[in-house]
Length: 389
Image 1: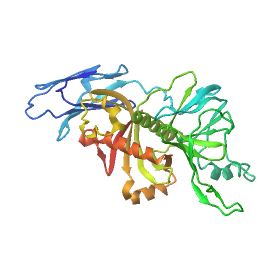
Image 2 (image 1 turned 45 degrees about the vertical axis):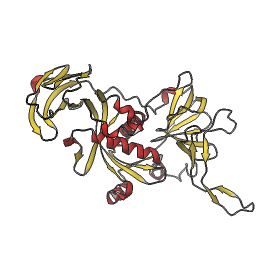
Image 3 (image 1 turned 30 degrees about the horizontal axis):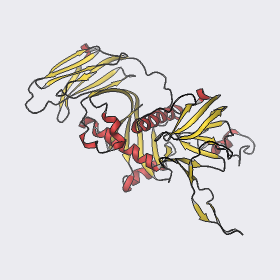
Image 4 (image 1 turned 135 degrees about the vertical axis):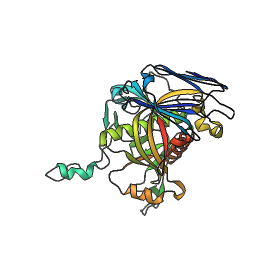
């Protein structure tokens, strides 16, 4: 797909389930007096005195030119029109953190940020999903006798990997020869006959990458470690470490996590909180069937952020599946009342990530919001963004 350097910005959002699309053609620069629009089933072409923009659509998407309607001009955006499409449904989502296919394989755990080996050649015999965080409170409804699981935490054995909403639980054996992450213990003075520092009861201990010092997870017990999905890549040992741009990886993991949780639990609102317990973002899923196709995205304002440099490579033209979300930032005491109301609502699910990753995600959302056509950036009091899958 290509776009002339002086061409018009084109934004197309395809809704696969609705078989419809919204097309926005950006306003020509000052002096532009005409625009020639050509729509075929497989492409879009916009000609102006300044140049030509042409987009080739993915093979699974076909436009219906005769269905064009609802043409209107929106100041600041340009021309809006709607049309029908013939789009194949999303292929079954292959989760980056559903590792069931890797059971019985030797796997290596890497730090996603720098590629440092965290666990080498671990044979995973059992890869199992964990129940929801409120499963213990529901046991009384299932059993007619005292809770048989009381005081029995779910800790993985040597060859287990338990999968939570946003984390893995693995067993780090003390006799491993392989590299191990650093521990950053939370210490407190505990009264004892030896009068020395011990780990604070019930306080998790940060697990830090030795090379890049990024927080990877937390220790849950002397052998059990929680690794956050946004920080770890698990690969079969015969494969090399995959180099995935950080912002692309974070978006994909969060998007897939939101889709899986909304499908499994019929919940569409989420709080994103740090490991410190603070809420950073409120997220509300609008839909997960969008295909976004665009050209000539302006990115000058964010070039100083290294986290987002990989996004710039696709600015001249890109097509990607996305989850469309509403969001509200909750940093610096913003949206305190709304955040408090969401936290007390049992229908709203909480996702816990390292605090630094919450800030990364907020930066990614803000950047994505800033590149949307102005009329699409807000819905009521919420900001709008697309998370790439």
